[in-house]
Image 1 (cartoon, rainbow, N blue to C red):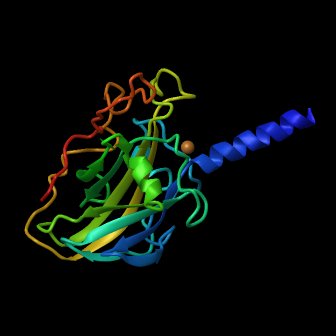
Image 2 (cartoon, rainbow, N blue to C red):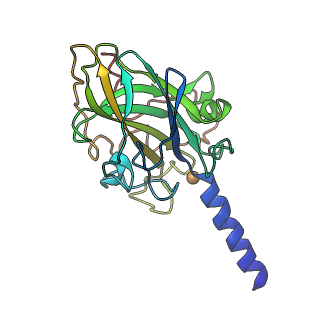
Image 3 (cartoon, protein in one colour):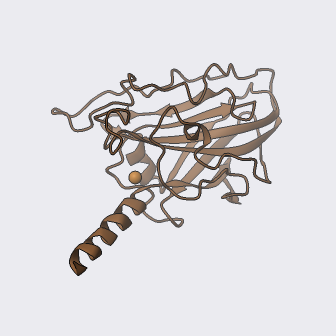
Length: 233
Ligand SMILES: [Cu+2]
């Protein structure tokens, strides 16, 4: 009795610490400070979203305006830093292999445009690279992007239970970690992002980048992330 209670606590702790969320954003390498609930629409926990038809697939479960905006210019490099529970911890359990993508929205999340995507490159998953980079990944803000207020949606998709669709087996399925940061582009160009993508709506359970077997033999050598191609501006 005692043992099984201890075991279940350990199992719970392991599950919780496996997950991840964004804590800080950098512009051209400059740390913008702890952004949680300040300029990041932080969820209350580091749990994944699994239902791709839910509103939470957009900006996670706590999508509301937060008080601050990160200032940046078109052409700047934006970096997102992830962690389990505290900065500099082990970031995300390495079993959680999958792609890392960045999207932008000019209309508070109504429509989205992908600006960065990394999947499987020379046998290395974007999540493995993220852990190697101490939780950081970067994207170039298109230099033609029009000035204005944007949401930047950074996203990890963990495929370790993605060999089946959540729809068919709700205790498994790919895990999504969307995170929305408020960014004010103070100086920009002439182009508005096409915004041809919606969340929910962009993903479906027929996408081969969502129902995907990491453990096939021989191991997968190519992968196409869901949500279409990257807009370069
Ligand atoms: Cu997890």
